[in-house]
Image (cartoon, rainbow over all chains, first blue to last red; front, side, top):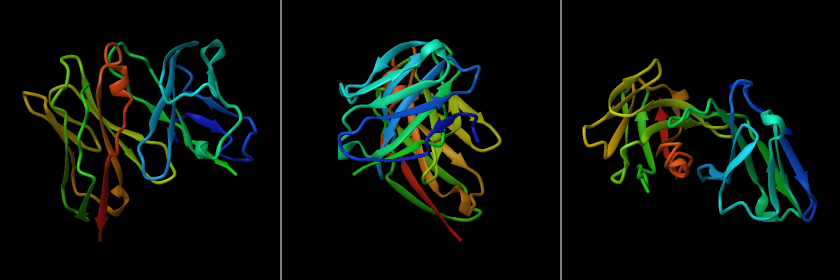
Amino acid sequence: DTGVSQDPRHKITKRGQNVTFRCDPISEHNRLYWYRQTLGQGPEFLTYFQNEAQLEKSRLLSDRFSAERPKGSFSTLEIQRTEQGDSAMYLCASGKGLADQETQYFGPGTRLLVL
Amino acid sequence: LAKTTQPISMDSYEGQEVNITCSHNNIATNDYITWYQQFPSQGPRFIIQGYKTKVTNEVASLFIPADRKSSTLSLPRVSLSDTAVYYCLVGDMRYNAGNMLTFGGGTRLMVKP
């Protein structure tokens, strides 16, 4: 257990529905990251926050995806109008946010299945 | 961009030392080298990070030659529980955050009894 928690751990939804995932980082960490991972592939970076500011977004993050981190604590990732291709493990990580180095501590992930 | 290249898979036996090499020919001056381990259905776990020469912790050693164009993760006396995917990342959060956050395909290590 790294101290990063994600909720829910599993989500099954029907195509076209909206889903929201939550991530609670390690409390003293000011950086928070979201990744997506499909079977047999490495994690793909989606976006990251420094405190409440969203500093970088991957081109993979379509308009249907939105992430927030109000007050710089927990974060939510919402997927609107889900598609079957969104089925994946969604991973959250947090880090101390040193200027140049970074060590990410990952949560257990949320596994999404879109039917 | 400092793209990394790792072997797709490796096999070893319990008790052996395993060395996984990552090539990063275009590494930038400020880039750090970080290795993660991932078990099935779990998030990646940080193993070790370094900038140059040698870094050792309770889990592994990281060897970085002077030109920094490659790095080698060394796992001493592996056990069956070391069977996992190992990822090498290269980057710097100030100037090269995208690289530091790019996992690639990783190396699948299979430890046999």
